[in-house]
Structures are given as structure tokens and as C-alpha cells.
Length: 469
Image (cartoon, rainbow, N blue to C red; front, side, top):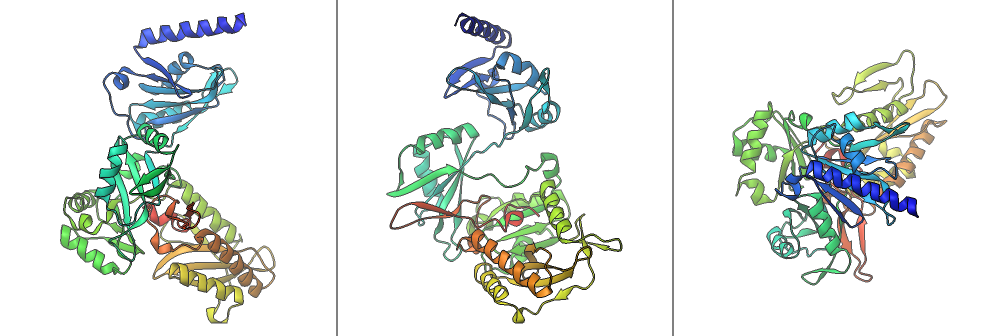
């Protein structure tokens, strides 16, 4: 007991000395100890977006006096949140906030794997800075302005509300909204306030939770500064691609290099970043057609490295290797599909029951069509079937089956597997109703049980619907 008290006294003395030297403030609250720089607690500086890192694999007796000098190697440390358990020991992880996202990125590069003690290396990665909450089961006849007025009475730090119109009736919303807060702390405080009891808006029971982060790795800011394409969402499903092009060219007088509309969203490419920025500025003005129609416009996101690797992996698994294989570029990207001999085109009208069932599902849920190809495997006897789901000239989804003994069996088995996967993914939802960068969408309430259920509509559209091109 005396040893424990002695250790606590030494720790307290070290922390007090550190605070005296640095002028930082140390406050313990809600299972964490918060070490804040004067700029935060005294000057009220806003916490920079994307400037926080997660620090893991910490020794349980590693505290602020030991962490601060290490984390400060990357740059000015604005805040350190150390997670504690009931005994006062750390939980083995912390969150460190820097001045800006570039410093946070440098911290990840320099400190990940840093040997904080002999034989003990820590992990440092970018923290998911989630500032957005999902509200499900909201009244469908309310507008963005009405939601903003009502929610600002209850919550602080709201900077925007994302509301998406119903695909069939634009006077209605889709029964869910996303609320953006100024920082993660404000969002966390709002969630804590709303979660314990029932939340009622206009006599509607509301479910509140964190909005799911976008899939994939975050895009580097330097890369985003080079993007010359815009992503536009909430377009009418019936609006032709040419009409979208005419509207943007007439409104901005800036020529479009390339435009592709898919369902209710579109990618618009321009010759330069300057031209795209000018279009963004014009179309984002008050009372522009974007505002009048309830569209959303933002920078498109390049496909990140993890998505390219995942796509390449699928291609490599599907295309069996051979000495004399010929390679050709796919979709003008830097990855390739092996061109195997004896490619068989299947007549969809003569398919098996599994093929017909898959075609019906794809047509009903996606308004799309299927094509079936069969490769003869080079390094093993049998055939590989590839099924492509496409709409107009856009490829929505590809699925490669396993090697089967016959061409007919390869097509039938692959069709069955893809049918089950699509059925589970779509979960009886309308794919045309996709609206956000998150999988919690189209939240409805069962009229009998009043329990929320979520539909997963976006697994097939992650690449397109989060603004990636």
C-alpha cells in the first residue's frame, strides 16, 4: 500500500512540474484526463479538422509526463486525452491533437512504431474525426430549415444538416438526416445528451447514432488539391445526362471535359483545377440552381490506394496466370486484366433458373442488366465465370466465380452465389434511394413494434456514391 501511495505521489509531482513548465491545463473528466495547451483552454482556438491521432499499445503506467515529450517531436501538441480506468491506470491508449492535419500526418509517419521504452513500441495512426450524427425516423414532411430551427434549441455546435429529397416526391425527405457539428467533441456531447432517453421531434420517436465513416482510407489533402472533377448528388433519376451538362454549361459558361451521370449523382470533369473551382464557387452561391433543386456539390474523391489494391486483387484472383497471357488496360487505370483465350458469351435468354433469378433481381432492384462471360482456366481444368452488372455504359458490379468443371456449371454456380450476395446486401431496399456517404440509410420504423431497422443499400456503390471516381 505504501508503495502504491509513493508511486502516486511521484506521479503527481511530475505532472505538477510539467504543468508549471509548459503552462498546460490538466483536467480529469468522464474516464479520461485532458491535457490542453493555452491556445485551447484560454484562447478558445477551434480544434483543427483531421489533426488528431490515435496513440495505442501504451504501457499501462505511461502517463502525460512521458508521452508529451515524445508526441511533441512531431510538432506543437494542442491536446492529449489519456484514457483511464477506475484504478487510475491508463487503458493503454490516448488521443493527441496537433495544430493541423499536416502535423498529425507527420506524427503518424515519424512516431508509429516508436520505441517509447526498451522493447516497447507504440502505434500512432490518424484518428477517425467523426463530427456527424445520424438521425433516423424523422418526419418526412419537414424541411432543412425546420430541422435546423428545432435542433439548435436542443444542441450546440451544429454547422450543417444534410437532408435528402425522396426520389419520387421531392417535397418529402427520406426519413433520415445527418447533422454536422463543429468538432468531434460537440458531436459526442450531443450524442450523449440524446442517447439516454427517448428523443422526440414533432411527436416522432427519433433514433440517434454516429454516422458511419466513409469506407476506405482518407484522401491526402495534397492529393485533393489536384482534383479537377466535381461530384453532384440528389439529381432527378429521370434527368438525362445531356440535361445536366447543359445546365452546368449554361450556368457557368465553362466547358466540360467529361460528364458521367449514374442514377441520382454525376461526376463532372474539367480541364483544370481553376476551372473546376470557379464552377464550384458559382454553383454554390445563394439562390443558385443547386440550392433551388436541393442538389449537393463537392469535390470528387480519387479512388484511394486500398481500393485499387482490392480491385487488383479481385482481378488477379479471377485471371489465372499463364506464360503467354496478353495484358490490356482496364478502364484507363494502371491495372490490368489478363485476356484469356476462348471467352464464351452466354445468351441470357437461354440461362438456367439461377441466371433468370439473378437477372430478375438486378432488373427489379437496380434497373440494370447482367452479362455473362466464361474463361477456360489455363493452369487447371475447368471454367471461370464473370458476371457484370451494368446500367447504360456504367459498370456497377463485377463478380468472379470459382473454377468449375463445365461452362454451364460455372455460370449456374456463380449466378447463385451472386444472387444470394445481392439479396443480402440490398435487403429488400430500393437502390435508387441511396443518399449519403454512410451505410445507415433509409431508416424506417415498423408501425407495429416501433423498432428502427436499417437498410444496407450502399455496398455496391461505395466507389461512386461517396464521390470517388
